Image (cartoon, rainbow, N blue to C red):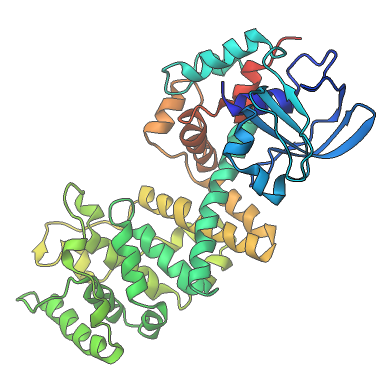
Length: 427
């Protein structure tokens, strides 16, 4: 038995309500089961019930055993003083409120549909990667798509919270925040942390001062990243080294300088080497004076996407890293990489900004952009494809990733409308 199953029973009233009584024998009439609370506090709010001859309005708290009330120390929490009914699988201990009155309790163990409980246990205990995979295609298409859309918005909301958290650290400076997030984005999965550390060690206001000379932007970035440790026979490296020597003393940057060992090259394709990514990042920062403002101005997806078709200095046309020239011309950042940056960095920034300003046009624009980005290709998406669930754009793939990670893997089937539809009792 799980509390989520009890939440499910109460939310959809899937239990025998004939002669419904408390554990002390008082008649219960449920007028409104209330709204599931996903934040702190009692499990259901805005509940309306009648116990005996008295109408009550308040909250419902749910536990497997009634002693959970004391185990969770609800008796010490003022938020639980408005609980009007304690719903439990089994009452193993009467519960007393802080004021000394007894809390009315409803026991469900003899009222739940045994077949429903068996179906739930079978669903969440099977070993399939996606618990409902055998029944997935039988679920109404509208139900499936609405849950995928809901999961996508949940994922975007979580990403936007991270943006707003960093914004708070940066004291509301959107330009600095966007700069740091874009830096982390250019690090992709492997070098995300050192890239973010680099951006924090090199304030955006300093980069903007030298934006018109991309070599100086490169000198600042590569120098602060720890790549310019000594002069060599490489003329361009020496040029950047000398430039950084001057700028580092001018802006007192030495104390926050990263070490070359923090950057990961092992098992990366050359196109993902952090040295090339830093050069590409320098190219982006040199295009616009204020990168965040530039993102806000992009109302057309093609314009936004073209912003990330960054050009590097001539040196990086035939170098993936310093001192190692390669044959041929190194192409610009690939479409897949640009799309990853847009999905994981730019879209969350736009959504967070819209939410902070209570201007939902930015949220709508971000979702519209996502719907114009091709569907992502990864192991999770291939798993869904095996169920004939084929996404057509990045908004849908974001929903499927969220569904997989935070519903399927956690066996949170009762929080998913697809799982709820599968378990719904036949009337």
